[in-house]
Length: 306
Image (cartoon, rainbow, N blue to C red; front, side):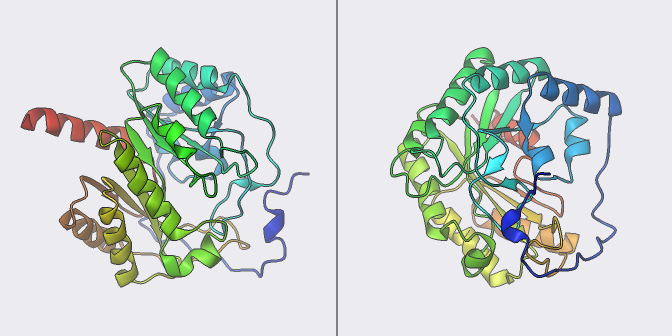
């Protein structure tokens, strides 16, 4: 039997708090949901929707919107908040770029979101594989915008530049939490390395939108959240997502509290006042939640203004 999180077995038990009434997932169209599932299964693909136990899977898949997880489903990191399997990854699938591109075409996606596990075992952190997936996806789907959510490529020098060469429409790298919680929540990552990555992407190609995401409820305070916003804006990050942390199991990082929907509205207003082009802030907001709608809304506004 596969143990998803062997590194968490000895963790103390952190009871899971009961969810408030405003955190509810919804299934909008069961026929479309199962169609999406069948296409994902047909190409033997992984999705972060499934592997990270996303609360929005029913709603998103009902709209044929799935976030593809490349380079396998086993992560080399052991983040305290994440439900993705931790362990020794398998070899890369050389056919994965073709499979992803084909699935995007079959789903008829206007906006494709592609993410990955951390692959610290690879010399380039998987940057070249990311490049190949994006290139093939755009080649097979020339009218589809592509958004990628990448690892930090920590200690991989300039390997991230290979990813940028594929010219994705949106380059997302999640900051996840505030600096004071990094050692507990993201022990394998470095806060300022993540900020620097986003800053460098914008330097390398000004035409690529940059994006980052933040979870709340892990034990941070409001001032720390605002400081993260300032750090991201100093790196010229364009888009920001803010969502509620939902504790996957009693062995994961403890949930400190649920934020009320009004608090998410307040955080959204603060973020907008700081100059982010797009802000999604709600209890169920995740990196790719409504990403297609948000991107095309911005695109229409820019066309209108020009």
